[in-house]
Length: 556
Ligand SMILES: Nc1ncnc2c1ncn2[C@@H]1O[C@H](COP(=O)(O)OP(=O)(O)OC[C@H]2O[C@@H]([n+]3cccc(C(=O)O)c3)[C@H](O)[C@@H]2O)[C@@H](O)[C@H]1O
Ligand SMILES: Nc1ncnc2c1ncn2[C@@H]1O[C@H](COP(=O)(O)OP(=O)(O)OP(=O)(O)O)[C@@H](O)[C@H]1O
Ligand SMILES: NC(=O)CC[C@H](N)C(=O)O
Image (cartoon, rainbow, N blue to C red; front, side, top):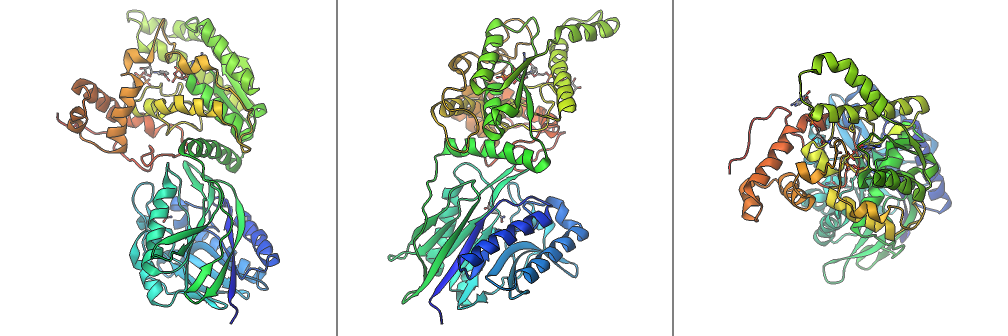
């Protein structure tokens, strides 16, 4: 019996629906595994289809294509390491989220996911049938147990695998990023190692899919001498990595040989990277090369332009200043300064003429009315019209720039500044927007395609935010100060607190009530808003799904 076993880990980025492309990635990784003398190539959960497929997996033709692709992969990769690859398995009327084991030209085992996640952004109970707990499979000298992602967040599957002879646990994942997720995963995986006394490989995919970011950060744990667990390998977050982990038979059982230990960045960097990769992958996977955005001289558009420059290079970012007579000289200067610091193109398109034309066309209907947000919104909408024209003509994806605080209270004009295809800061509260700009000004990394240094002009970070839709307008005329607003939203959205809990924390009852009114009253706007990268546990869309019509209000 050989006393060594090498697993090649494919921390890779599949694309949902690109079955031949994902299979090609698998083949390429398998060639590398073979060259490295590996016994097994492990790929993440649902790798053949990409993850999450949502209802696409319910289409029988798609599932059949995916299964055929896996069977072809098995035949093509007959002579070399075994492969573990995630994919759907349809049998009769049942559909499973499965982990397929391929060896010697054949499918030798299928592990079926047992614990189907159905909270937060997941809906797997709606898509898949619950598999029975599968036993371990054998590759060469080793019996391997593979709880599939959520299966490893609970004790039952790993416990059964240990009892039925598994010698290591190899967990394939499609585990999406949110802030500090690595600590949460580590907690669950350490528990499995402690309970089972088996080493555990945690293999996650990377890359963006719609609003989700799969952040990799795969790792390997050995049982510790004192009944705990010891981390012996850690791969970096967000990068595609192919790495080999060796297992050796010891008197205590199989143990992983310590290997690569990549640095895990702090939360500001991880969030920034998630927003950048989210945009980059959304564009790459949907075929865009360039973006356009309205550059107002304010902090939100400056940050979005910075994220876009880091994602696709400043030469692919077009900033457009669309002034009216309410636009201050300071805004004009700040917009130019921000674009120049990034090295991005800045164009100017005036909206006064178009606004006057719209005003004239409507004059006979509006004659006896007083000016209000109607006129303000026309300006915002005309900017949307101009920007979408540029998007149409030059094929540039229009980015929207509303931060999470604004998105939460509906502080944006529908079909105006909400017009656009992707919003990189949708899940970032305004108070975090400020801190993120400071962080980016002080830090630069290899994966950023924009320049190093103070790319967000300091005066943009310090001046009071304004929509500049009427003279001397400030956000704080209509909204509570952002520190207060964000703290209340943190309570209402992220923690589902009652209004009385927030009042007990010292917030003014009227302000709390007003924020609740704005939050529930703008659900319909969010329904029509552009997607953006999920970095919290309560991102708008899948984590928090509220009715558009809702007459319930919390009583104080
Ligand atoms: N429940 C519902 N379901 C479907 N549609 C609904 C609706 N309630 C209103 N509507 C429709 O929506 C309209 C009102 O919404 P909308 O036209 O957006 O207008 P509205 O929300 O009244 O005004 C936009 C707000 O966003 C602020 N703003 C604008 C631009 C930029 C920024 C910024 O700082 O970034 C802020 C602006 O100062 C103002 O407070 C109604 O006239 C009605 O047609
Ligand atoms: N004068 C302008 N020129 C170009 N775009 C504009 C202009 N005014 C507003 N926009 C667009 O509309 C978005 C919302 O703008 P607004 O200034 O009203 O609010 P904001 O949320 O404070 O954003 P920012 O901090 O970017 O100014 C901006 O981010 C920008 O994309
Ligand atoms: N794909 C899954 O089963 C993911 C669920 C798991 N709890 C996670 O977020 O990592």
